[in-house]
Amino acid sequence: MVLPLTLASESPQRTSLLARLGLAVQVQPSGVDEATIAVPADPAEQVRTLARAKAAAVASQQPQQLVLGADTLVALDGLVLGKPSSPHAATLMLHRLSGRRHVVHTGVALVVPPAGKDAPPDWTGQDAALGRARALLPSLRIDAGAGYRVLTAVVSASVDFHRLDAEQIAAYVRNGEPLDKAGGYGIQGAGSRLVVALHGCFTTVVGLPVCAVAQLLSAVSGQALLCPADPACRMGGRPHCLCEDALSIARPEP
Image 1 (cartoon, one colour):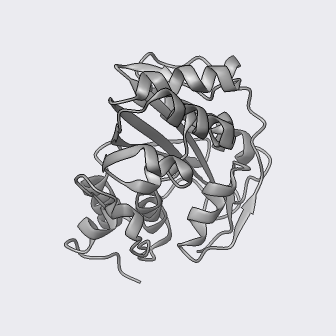
Image 2 (image 1 turned 30 degrees about the vertical axis):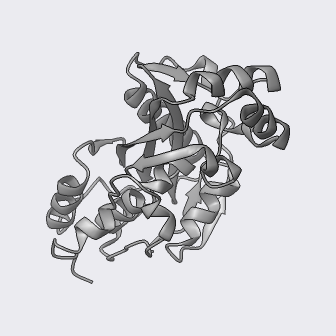
């Protein structure tokens, strides 16, 4: 990459997922208090808003670096299920998800600094790359101002749960995994056994849609980035990987 990439998150899952792209990533938690941020009612727009707020907070401290922010939430019947605050809350949440389909939304925001000191935003020569990114990410939005560009996108996936009995839920809660996970489960861990089918991108559910991030970084860097195939992206249901779609679209010029 032309500039170092800073991840505005201390999530080890997100750091690990970014490593798939072969990038040197600096980690700096945003410190944003999500409770103080006004968010839209739509869950998909909530994660976009929060991802942008996190990225902007770190970018204000590191003005010459690319900064990536992300936020993930689980929605059931349009209602957001956050991180359970206790084992009891996790138990109730998992009972609600049992035998049901829910949606996981992950928003990403990439803050792009000026090409040089005091340089205005300049997309010259990047129109084709941005066009490819838009084709793959219909949710892509680009905002420019004060010398910066901010690219945001939302990627969603549907997850079907097994019908769980009380003992299965109790055993998983005792595992401890649900307490720091949106929706009360981690699909990359023991929570995978709760899932019947995944419809969408596996990494979206983990917390960072790697293929979407690859497209954003390709659009701003001029380098073609694709995440490597992962068997987990095929864990039942209807798989969908933006990187596979990208193979049918001409890559950006090196």
